[in-house]
Amino acid sequence: MELAKIKACICEGAAEAAIIDVLLDNDQLIFKREEMLDESVIRCRDGKTFETRYLRKGFNDLITVIRILDSRKENFKLSKAYESKVDVINIITAPEIEMLIIFNENKYNEFKKSGKKPSVFCKENLKMPSVKSYDFVREYFANPVILVQAIKKYNEISKIRKGEHTLLDLLK
Image 1 (cartoon, rainbow, N blue to C red):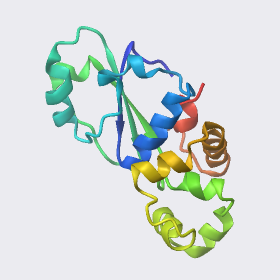
Image 2 (image 1 turned 60 degrees about the vertical axis):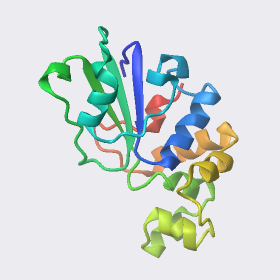
Image 3 (image 1 turned 90 degrees about the vertical axis):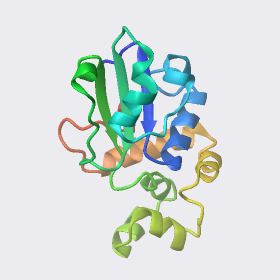
């Protein structure tokens, strides 16, 4: 995966942002915080809003936008003026980022039998009411080794579509 010199890392939710922050702060990704716009994760899902807030600052270089999201259908539309200056890479965490917690807890089979969404399973079965909060996820995966192991388990078990990128692709 080729990345431009400047990166924008856009996360769908607080849990995704916490995971990326843990990986960045522990030097586990193929890019560093210093290479990112504003040196932080961006919480802006709409392409036009992103364009207005960040691209109109007059960048001459190509920018890689790394989107961490669970939806395969969500579009990120930019105006024609910026399409050639921005390379968008979608990192898919389907069905939900909470799958990393389920894999870490070795509860995948129990989860499959439950028929619940991953976040609901974590809240109800694993008694983690704050599973979608930044602080909870950041603390839960404070040890980056545990997080990396969960990402690898996710990749082993999940059905990843051809040409699709996952968090594993961002790891060193």
